[in-house]
Length: 235
Image (cartoon, rainbow, N blue to C red; front, side, top):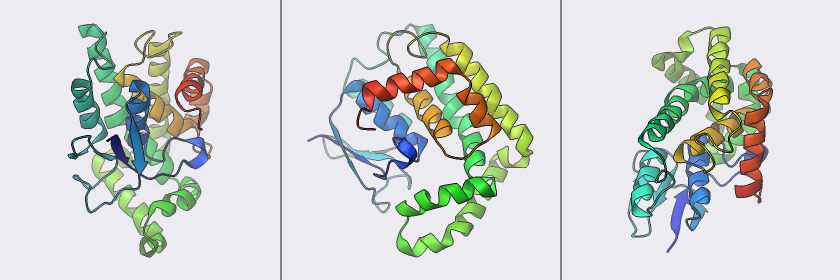
């Protein structure tokens, strides 16, 4: 029985998924060539009330993209990171946490904090909602903005948030340099996050200084295109 990846099945704007964490986990499975199938989520069964989650080969249900990846690294060893040095593993962890726990909120702000961006997001986002919730999109926007304010990113000016995002891409471009993958010649788990966020930021069809700054990073754009061509030929 293959792993079942429970996530929205739509691929808006050529992205693997609207959610960077869904894209991150699917990229991991494709990197590892672990058999899987995608099914729409049942949020009543989602262990932590969010996507993605998986049904493992033994029937267990598990949530959180990073925890699932760490489980599969051990259960399907040797994993993507098995060849890395201790120093490279540490650097990969820093990249992954930077993207998942910091840049993620910049990305949220860029999609939800600007009315024009939210208008672009609405048609695709509402496709994954139950019909009775689709009319409540403005309430969802307010809730997301409230989350951003509670977390802290939403308390900054638009220009300050944009500057944060551009500096993140500057740092990642320097780290990637001219390597095929962020830590060398082979993909690692850090690449799962990096690819997911590059795709999510560069293919979202709303112009912003952060998107333009990212698109000007030739090495990051070439990285995106290499991974897409090799691991996502269906896109």
